[in-house]
Image (cartoon, rainbow, N blue to C red; front, side, top):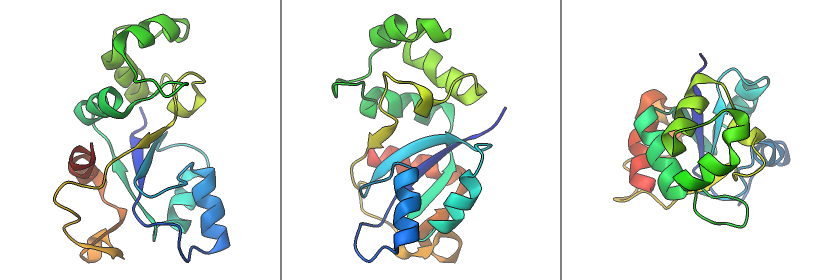
Length: 162
């Protein structure tokens, strides 16, 4: 059962090298504070994360944060909010039942990939973090900044950005 990586773009579009910009486009991170979710065993993902590590942060998302994220920021095609009724109606053909909790469980178990679903937008548009960033947005997480791999502490950041 692979972990799910939550990947958030922290820095904006100014002065981004072309190769990093292309990588961010492949990850669907077009704007600041956009977030995507990918399984950690996705082919080529680790290389893309390393290439864009100076513009993004990522870590493993847990079940509670994923459910809250899908409820508050999940969008369907047509930019309508994601609801339990929508999940039961349109995702039952994928074997997903139980509303948003069932979708979150299926995502964490690796039964389905969010970016493969046609009816749910794969990008979550988040707010800037409440209380601001606690550290520099130009330094790696392990070096006293906000960028790069942060492990399970991504959940705290996501909750502040919902």
